[in-house]
Image (cartoon, rainbow, N blue to C red; front, side, top):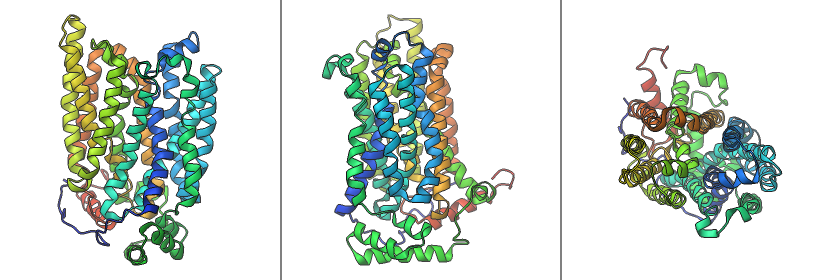
Amino acid sequence: MMGDSDGDTQPLVGQPKVWTGTLVIAISVAIVGCSLQFGFQTGCMANTQDTLRKAFTDVTDLEMSLMISGVPIGGLFGGLSAGLIADKIGRKKCMLLNNIPILIGTVMMSVGFNEYFFLVGRIFIGFGCGIATGVAPMYLSEISPISIKGAVGVSHQFMITFGILLGFLLSMKQLLGSFSDYWHVYFAFPALPALYQLILLPLCPESPNWLYYNREREDLARAALTKLRNSRSLADEEVDAMIKERTTATSSVMVSYKQLFTDRTLRLTLIIGIALQGAQQLSGVNAILNYGPDILKKAGLSNSDLATGLLGGINVIMTFISVPLMDKLGRRSLMILGQAFMIVSFIGLAIAQKIHNQHPDASWTAPVSVVTIITFIIFFAIGPGSIPWLIIGEIFTAEARGKASSLCVGANWVCNLLVVLTYDQLNKALKSNTFFLYMGIVTFFFIFTVLFVPETKLKPVDQIVREIKEQAEKFPPTVF
């Protein structure tokens, strides 16, 4: 079982906290142009479904589910191709070119001639979001010093949650009046973060890891690190660490897809990465975010739009709070803590909804449902919401990171699509028992995390790989 052994391990190149201007700008460009886009698309459909039903007459429940699912459909293909593209042309060019499908999708959704045109726009922008969720965590992990890698990694999830909140707030009639009057403008919002990235990203350095491992340009990697750290000595230390890692590695050749499945250590590492993505999406969080108003109405809450906005705000605050915790308490500990409280939250929500269905006059079920959903969001934000994106950048070597990240991100989008497509039908068939089903899924991943997920806090990748190798060797080859 993986625990917190070697938790006091010192990082490979020391712990200087170098929040340079170049690093901050590079982080902001990645999370605004990539993470914010994904978050906005996750939250933008929660309060807009009634307006779209009126705008596109005779929209069936299936068509609405497909419109909501357009982003994960496109995201699946974008996520699977992200690593290949990022390895081929670099993280920076990949993010720049990714604005093409995002802007095409933005125009189509904003114009919105009919529901099918809108759906195709959602698929285009979903493809862009899929690439964004693959390349942004990679870029953030590869430009950040090891001492603040956790905080920088969580900035991706923080901006996702901020995007979700924006999607909620900008569509609330309580704040901005009749949404039906400006929904075309609302769906044009993604053009703003795309423009921000297009203007500033050309000024940012390429990933030093990609330059060294993929292009074999030590000189360019050193120059990029010097710019990011604002210190030649710190850049030299990190380049020396890369050289040492490559010298001691069993192979410096880029890992193939076949090796990811045939090498025992790589296979277990990939399973851990995919399982963490499944733990995030199969928890049902996107069902709560996309169908939040409907869930709260069924629980007896009258003002569900405001409650949905409250959930989005709590999600942002708790993700922000998790930033310092990530490098203090560790990834594994927060993941386990978050999943434990999510299980308790689903039990409370399922019981409250079941009692409300049997006794509609029971006034206490609405506040209990709100409290349990808030508790779920709080502990999702500090655990499964943030950690999977961070860990996939930490457990794979540079030679495997691109291809492995594509598979992990692709799995994330498959699970996202599965939840969004099935929630409405599951809810009709199982009613409140739907949340018992999600509780069972979270429990499964809780057990998996306890048994197999290593602690990665302040550990160099070669040590993490060594620990996973030792774990894999405890099982027969037919298992891992």
